Length: 519
Ligand code: FAD
Image (cartoon, rainbow, N blue to C red):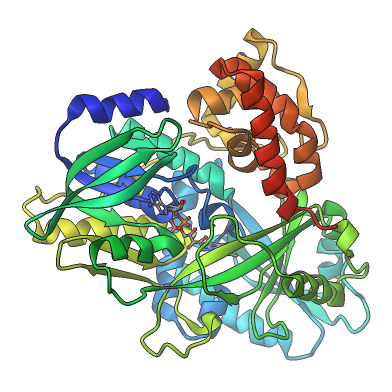
């Protein structure tokens, strides 16, 4: 995964590609993998780093969506449950089976959710992750000893998947390259190239050098999440808005708040949503919220009311109420929801299904969906285009395609487990270049991970390393600021940059991290 090599490939080939995909989040990566694995030539262009947008800010669940079942959206739940099983099957090093407990403080909660979740299990068919069952009070407290005991009647256990979203994104990039696709970060699409009213390519600017590239392609796909309307406007300036952004916030707490490996699911909060507290990399993620946002941003900021809502709701179920000072990191993400025809729908009521439209000039835009359905979205897009174009007809192979890093029997207690089959190579790199020491002992990040990220995973900045190649910023924002200078030094040496670059990188990272720290 080498950026210079990727740029050279675009210049050398100077050909018309089958597909240009704009956007390097879950949706764009799923489409580029679908295209490259079916033998089409494809270039994916991301304006910042891969998964910098919404795709690094999820609840980290690979799930059918218990909430959507309650809303009666059976087809969406069924599709997502199938995709959950496929994600686990194709990337077992990143997707694991997570047990959830719904605590019951009212008599009807246990029978009601046991029945509902049994339907959930049945919908997942042969890809089920385990049966949902009612649990006694004693067993519920054994799983989650930190629950408030007053009034607790028992619980219900069910299973869903859990993953690391940005690591999955990087592994998708690697798989695309292995299938001869091209992926480029820091390459912003600034213009659509048209000929006789048809789109025949894009102009993109390399944000590192300012150099402009004209890339011609038979098909251009707009998979830019909450930014899709900006690209649509390049095509049709007076087009109607297609995306509606809804913000969701998560707080990260120390593991002591939910000490075992069981997650908590609160099925009905005061705003009529669900709240999760999920163990993740030795911490606990608590969230989320659903607040309509007018503007698309790459670094959305959590609102005070979202933070207090999460702390207060979690505090109603936990014996020790979490305080602001307990928050290790706060992060916000924007859901790219397909704008509802009704317009008046609240964001929590808008379907999480995906929507595809093709403009008169031939650009395909996709919006909506979930991380869990990224593969199905890719398949739908490529099927739709190849059906009507003169491209060779092909059949999807991604249902059984192993993702880079594939490894069975993973030891999730090993902090390098997310690298899957690459783990041994990182250990070898650490030994050969004397990079075995801890960069952060509390987060169990070793120095070799920085060089690995730069050399083999196209990390370009301190933020790329601390936010997406490792998850330091999301796990403990203050600690990530502490280790930023060391990362800058290692990267500067690796890339041959000077002290001024190092200083600039640290300043940039600190200003981003400031929004992840609660004072
Ligand atoms: P993005 O990830 O935002 O990617 C779009 C990319 O396009 C961005 O990286 C952006 O930089 C790039 N771009 C924009 N303009 C340009 C341009 N001009 N040139 C080049 N690139 C450009 N789903 C689940 O399955 N499980 C969950 O647990 C879950 N939790 C969620 C929790 C929250 C709070 C939120 C907000 C969403 C959650 N989702 C979850 C949904 C899931 O995260 C999103 O559906 C998914 O990440 C959207 O991916 P995307 O590729 O469409 O958008």
